[in-house]
Amino acid sequence: MAKPPLNERISKANADLIDKTQSSQAWQSIFRPGSIFRKGYTDSPRNRSYVIMNSVLYHLHPVKVKRHAVKVSYTLCLGGLSFFLFILLTVTGIFLMFFYRPTAAQAWDDIYTLQSSVTFGLLVRNMHRWAAHLMVLSVFLHMARVFYHGAYKAPREFNWVIGVILLMQTLLLSFTGYLLPWDQLALWAVTVGTNMMGFTPVFGDKVRFVLLGGVEIGTDTLLRWYVLHVLLLPFVTVIFMAIHFWRVRKDGGISGPL
Amino acid sequence: MTEIPEHLLKRAQEARERAAKAGDGAEPAAEPEAEAPTSETSAAASKIPAHLLERSKAARDTAGGGGTAVVTAEAPTAPLPAGAAPTPTGPGGHTQRLLTVVKSGSIQDVKSKPVDKVHVWPHLLIVEFVAALAVTAFTLVFSVFVNAPLLELANPNETPNPSKAPWYFLGLQELLTMFHPMVAGVTIPGMALFVLILAPYIDKNPNTSPEKRKFAVSLMTIHLMFWAVLVMIGSFFRGPGQNFVLPWQEGLFFEL
Image (tube, rainbow over all chains, first blue to last red; front, side, top):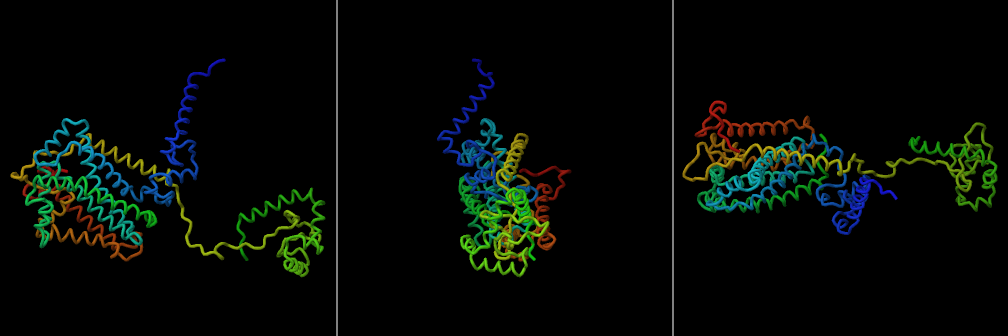
């Protein structure tokens, strides 16, 4: 009996392997019903609904949205991109944390070594820096977009308030990160910034003292801002983002067309 | 008169044609059945309530047969007028007739209007995925070609000239040249933030289209432009000693 040609046997073996993998208990436990990786996924309205309903994305998106909500020209994706840049910054930031010690004696050397000796160190630091500036810009533009669409009107008033808080968080995150390379740019930009805050009436000096961890910028400031930058501010930001996204859904999705 | 929806008319038309086709062959068989309801005994056997039967009888008497407003299901006992379409016959030999069409709005209070919606997968997720990919690619390529600044080690004893804050604070730093530091650094940004947070509660205008909220739109635009100009001046037009310089003559004093 003649064997079928080689390419047919390979494609059959391939199909068998995929079938076996997709039927395994492990695979079925990972991909919930409706996942596009499940066995026998077909493009039907039912499965399209399941893709969202049975995945982690259901936290972010409903099964269906208004047709106008997918129009790029309305939102320019600015809110979503701000969130995505936050994720990108978290990923690159974690990478940088492996090579950085927040003390005045070591910080600058660590960054220098990161750039010169660590594989992809320079690239990842660049990405962290530029993504941070981009995020400030996109959050700011997102706010302008929301204003011009009047999207902060009832019932979305409170989500606007949270949005302004998130804008502040973004600026603080960027500003605290600015000090960490401990070069002349970092030191003096932060000096200018904190001097301005020192003019707060009545308790200006105390505000400045708490921010700097002393009367002038030094190694204590570095540690303080490092903890703010990598832990406290991201933590608070994530909480506010969760409320922000939740309110977008609860207030009826993104605002309607003009 | 109530307007009958198109799909119901079509369905009735189809049923009539089907009955006409079947009726040609089945006429003799249907005849005895059609005759049946006239006798009182078989009327009791059929499930039609007595009072309805009576009403229909009265109606038939007044209309002289062939009226369109027959209330119950009943086969015509009088010979059909020439040229009239054969009446469709339902199961059990009863004639089905459309009594009336009640529009949903007249008895139900429909609160929500149907909205034109699309599935998030794939329509929205694809857009988001592409946008995320594009911004990643942009950041990556930009980072390959442009390095983040790393100046010499911080030295508290040597103040660079000029010393500038990060670009998003340069508007505030620019205000420092005009106002007392407390006004520029605390009062103005504090007020701006306060008003910004309260914006949705101050703006009572329910409209969202720009034509109907010209005041809000122009106010915001003026402030944004004012702010952008301040940041631009602070970034590109300030040199040593915070003096005004032209970047194309004396170069840039700006690091990101």
